[in-house]
Amino acid sequence: VIAYVSGPPAYDVLKEHLDPEAIAVADNHAVLGKVGFATVVLIGIGLAQIVIRWAGGTSPPRWTGWALAATLALTAILFAVTAHHGGGIRRPESRDLLKYAEPG
Image (cartoon, rainbow, N blue to C red; front, side):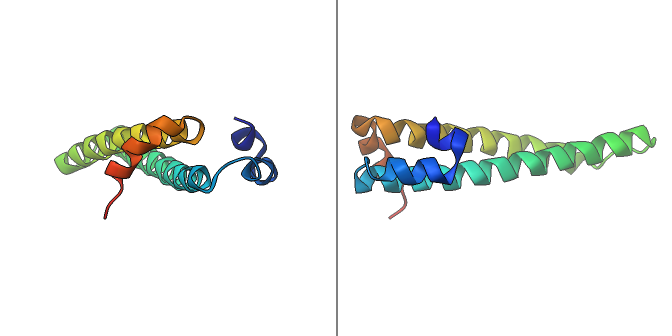
């Protein structure tokens, strides 16, 4: 929580107390969190586009609803994986499951 709330300076302090595997998991967790945030922003833009078209009296194409639903489902999976990586930072016993989720 400290690294999340206070940013990079706190993360640098915590790096001294974590093993290299925990640091790698934390880095993956950070990247997944940023990708998840960007995906949520894109979903918001898509929903705004649908609302604006609907308010203007034009119905949006059918594929936009399906695309947003699929993106939302994938984002939910992404956040679940991100949360699991976050748990792997403090719980070394759950890191074994992360090894199966990584490609290669």
